[in-house]
Length: 444
Length: 170
Image (tube, rainbow over all chains, first blue to last red):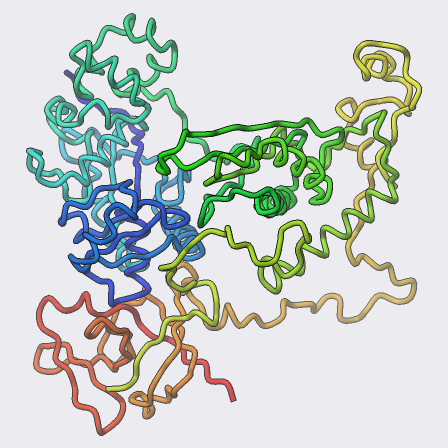
């Protein structure tokens, strides 16, 4: 097979290694080199592990309550998700990366695609970007104290693979893997590298598609690349063919430079303990609705429809219950009161006294720009009314921004909230709140 | 001024707005999409925040307006790599850093001899002067009572950042 990337443009995927655990250790040096796990919302399962925790064989996604005692015995430290810290470190990371690549697409809290210029053909060494990647890694480590992995290739799907190879140490990988930087366009023969990546780890291959591939003997990225396109088109249409083209080094997924305007906004959380009464469910749904409305106003959007969903715990042994209800709003709105009036009756409809609920959520849909309000013939709203509601929302948002969220809230949200998310092991907002700054000792 | 309300008595139709779009010439009934930017501005004028029009003489200072002094600009050179820490203790007293000071730390600055650095010692952030002594890095307190600490060869990762300001409230 010919070189993967001989063109002038290359795609890079940069992501943080164990991002949450790394952020925790950055602001609390007692965690450096220690086995550490970070738990998901409500201290549910393990979502990030430090290198030392990985080495102990702790797996991602394990429910915390199942492994709690075993980890305690082995001295593993635990933190709840500290989103204030991770979001701030994410912004810092992205602004450093912007200095390194011409175009950056922020893909998630800790990963970004970038467009690079390959100075010459990779084969003669002049276009090898491995050294560039090493310098980037050192710079991020020095300025932010965060380890990142850098995968470079011709396309996004390939860059994902290269990023994986940059991280994969051991596991029968050849020389060059697992060193934090991998340039797939600079290796003489990419085939053995693609064979080292199992089909399940190819970006865009879900669980069902992976099973379909395995049944056909397509076990790794190389086999998928060389599968006849017709078969793939038959199974998953143009999406599959595009994925295969990307694997072959032909870019089909352009960099998304501007985040698309959000078409949905969702707020959902699991409860600290199951909810089996309507007043508490109403409080929870009201709280999530207000939070979602706040997000909407910040995005300068209005919602045309609203969905409330609930579900019971998959672990409690009783029969699983999940349900959702949607209402179309007569007039698109971002007014907390209007959205509450729509959401609370849905909560009542979904409540079942015999099904203790573990999680609920509110999704605002059919979002439209605030400036384009379509008036409804049958739901008149006087301009004066509209102006006053707007002013009220602005005051509420202003107070909550200035004095902390929850300073002013709707009574429906409740005061004590015994159901509220558990974050028992939460570290401090060390980079975003003055009262939470870490201490530096001048004692010896 | 506010959005123009459509005429509340449209032609009978299955689609409530179908009647409107057929009569775009009627200014009362034009839908938002059909408007030019200028038309939109005319109908929904944006408030000009604080744009007061003085009827008298123009201010003689108008040509000299500058931005106010922004402490962020003074104290922070590299925003993405700057962190704040709170000082506890008096071992850096002679360097002018006191207990309770707000420390501005910039990780982008290369640690050099003579700078005040935040080092990680026994799992804690510790504030020290960085010195070079017989070819080795050495951490020293700015206080006669505390002995210096030599750094080994692989120890430079223990320098967490360079302190560039200590903000002391009176």
